[in-house]
Image 1 (cartoon, rainbow, N blue to C red):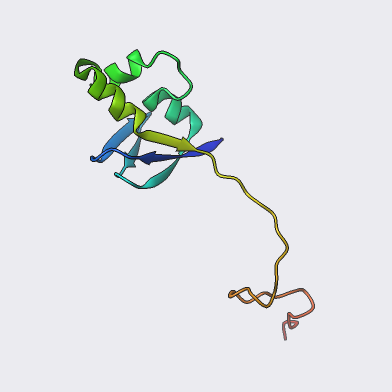
Image 2: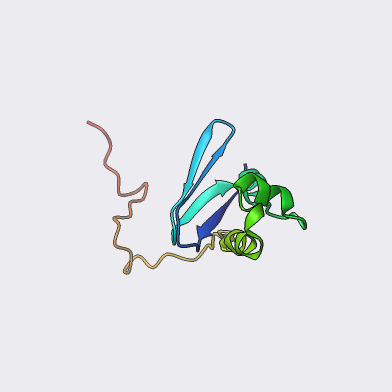
Length: 103
């Protein structure tokens, strides 16, 4: 299952139930969710967000509802591989050679 980050940049917290799973999007916090959940709850990837606005109850708010929806920002995490400088690592690193055999 592919996941993305969503950040709620509105001035309110937003609950988001989906298929017996409760999601919660606190204001100004980044939350990880499945892409399919973002598509359903926030219309991610849809050109026409009308159904999404109706589902959220924001369709009668006009431009204010559209702005609320636009304030949910989606980002993708990227893992970067880089060499480890053992002198700068704060966690203890062990290798197979450092481990003591069990007595």
